[in-house]
Length: 581
Image 1 (cartoon, one colour):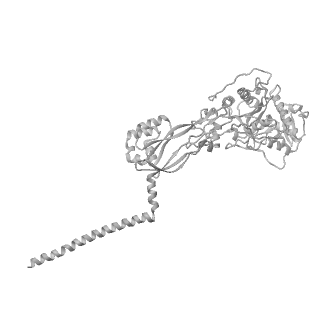
Image 2 (cartoon, rainbow, N blue to C red):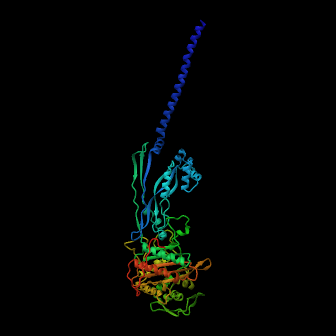
């Protein structure tokens, strides 16, 4: 009986245990279910944007259509700068690590060797920035490098199509064109000045892709803005000759540097602008930074005697002298303001032409002291001294022409023969262009122009033409620049030999220069040659700069088919190419 009652009690307890287990399971499942519903409600109602953003990260992609940088040509259409397709090498750090690519010693060491780094440095480069998944290994790699690395088939290493700037004429046009950086942005010269025009705007398209990478929807699209080509005023034929001759002179006379600028006087177009030493814009590795400087626009110097046409013109314009005026220069030395002003020799009485031909410091000093100093300064300012030339290139210097309420007699004297002020080569070229253009000043330009910009008449045409005739006498027998003569053509100009200023005075280094025009019968070109710090016994402008002017001006007039106007009909054919120099 007791055993029977025990079985009945046990049977009554069994359903109780099962019910508690069932209740626990139901409660647990209910809790999980409620939690899931609460989480879903929270994400769908309170933070729906987070899910959308996560989805977009996995499905939205931005595709861009790169635009090749515009081409730069010379005035005749010859290519000066072009963009060529290249490939860059990059790595997906996540893929590299997951695939264990850096543990494959043979391929990893071969990859590092082609990239010219150690395997350890390569591994560190890829794993250094954990926030950055994609890492460039080499930008704008050579075709041989790309081909070799592609054959290695390293997991996680990929290639991207890009473009690279190439300059066919190399160092000949380096300072004008400048160059671009690895991201195709202009850094120097024309490339920087007209960067927005040359670069254009790449197209952009926002698309949605499915799990298999197929494009299923286009959400946004921006069309690319085409880049524009740029045609410069430069004549590459003349540019090549100019660079060759300037480089030769710098080497011959052991000079520190040299610059040359050649301008069309009727339009203000720069036909040639060269500097020596130059650099190769296609391979700038290990190039000293100072070589990138366009000295023709950045470097200033005291012009010396090349400035002497201005006090003569100022005296003519203001009526303090005329074409028959004779100036007593005496025996070659006078005292002005307690200081000595002297000529190389005693020239006695000189007319204005004689002052220019003999480059008399005393002659221009007497002309400068014979007029109010404001009139002399106005002539300098009107001719562009102390202001930029209109080129717009980054780094162009305006030179220096001091403003002061009172000028001593000696300061006015030194100003008249090119000391106490500073100019650039392009400023001198602009000044001589105005003289050759009948006294009309125009801004200079590096772009080919069908319609020249409006000019300003700053000197009467008759006096400008008279100065052109005086400048011709400088190159004739008895003048200071006989080596500037051009067979078959009449040319004129002015030499300059100035000591370089140093702290507290002047040193022993010189700048030899020549600025001239041609042909005299119908002026078309103005050319300035600067030879900086020639060494040895030859440092006068008539010795170091005038011969360069002669060759370059002669070549330019022939290449432009200007008719000979000189008594000597013998013309030596001068040629040059992009590789000249």
